[in-house]
Amino acid sequence: MNKKILNKQQKRRIAQGNEVARKNIIFNDLESSTEGLEPEATGLVITNYGLHILIEGLDGAHCGNHYRCYKRANVPSLVAGDLVIWRHANPFGVVVARKNRSSKLARVDISGKTKSVAANVSQIFVVIACAPLPKPNLIDRYIVAAEAEKIVVRLVANKMDLTNHKNLTYLEKVISKYQHVGYPVIRSSVKIPLGINLIKYHLRNETSLFVGQSGVGKSSLLNLIEPTANSPTRTLSIANEQGSHTTTASKLFRVSSGGNLIDSPGTHAFSLAHLDSRQLMQGFKDFHPFLGQCKFRDCIHDEQSGCAIVEATKKNLVSATRLKNYHHIRDELKRT
Ligand SMILES: Nc1nc2c(ncn2[C@@H]2O[C@H](COP(=O)(O)OP(=O)(O)OP(=O)(O)O)[C@@H](O)[C@H]2O)c(=O)[nH]1
Ligand SMILES: [Mg+2]
Ligand SMILES: [Zn+2]
Image (tube, rainbow, N blue to C red):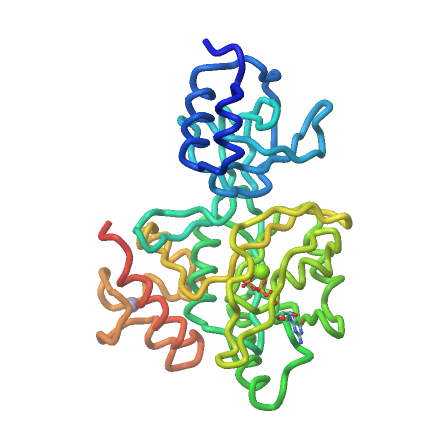
């Protein structure tokens, strides 16, 4: 067994920035050695930097402090909000286990792998704005991902100071659609400011997650809610009014007025291919009163005659856009 976690040569190679060598050295040592490691303790994942993980110690002398850690190879993937068992060491601690998750908000990435955005989240705030204008298809996807995990959903309509006659009409149409389904909407602005105390109020005693298109102002809201967060923000591209993916990894912040808030990177797409059709329907709770009323038991709720949900769209009881989004998402689910 190695006496030291890292010898001089290994430290020099790491200092030279050889990332592959660094990963191999650390991993080999982690798997083979326990020397220099303090006893097991609990920790909270603040963020996953890829090569290492930033955790907050939750007990003993390490309580409230942040530590960089590697994880043992047998530990499943870690994301902001995960609770872990770890062992302190210098310069890197070691995560030895991940605790069971009460929830995980996940999507499928380009390579087809299910990727968690955050863990142990109790509510999500879907942030929308008048610039960039909201995409209802994306909003519905966040909602489905949250409802599948029984996570409370709230919407935040940010940048209210930038509304004009044209974009306000569209924004209010979107807002009323989701209010009709039963989702609360907070109107906010970082510049005026507006709605910040209401968001803070709902953050207390919860672990919350900000999701939304790039550039809607998630990190700006976070910085106003918790100035010590100091999360990077960036101006929208003037050419297309799109954000530039300023936040690159989900990161958890302790809010001094109460609660944990996880800021996540903006997305232009959010694939839900990992869900099954039952979970998908869970995300469309405005359809539920009509289920069982379709003419055919195996109704796929499209234009076929006798579909009670289609009929409901004609009476404006259900949004036709939501039904269209339901079909979009259903078409990409794995066959279950
Ligand atoms: N006028 C106005 N501008 C805002 C408001 N909130 C954010 N912004 C601006 O919008 C731009 C994008 O804000 P960010 O906070 O970086 O957006 P984000 O949602 O975190 O973006 P990603 O990290 O890329 O997902 C910045 O230039 C902010 O200053 C607001 O309420 N009003
Ligand atoms: Mg951001
Ligand atoms: Zn039907």
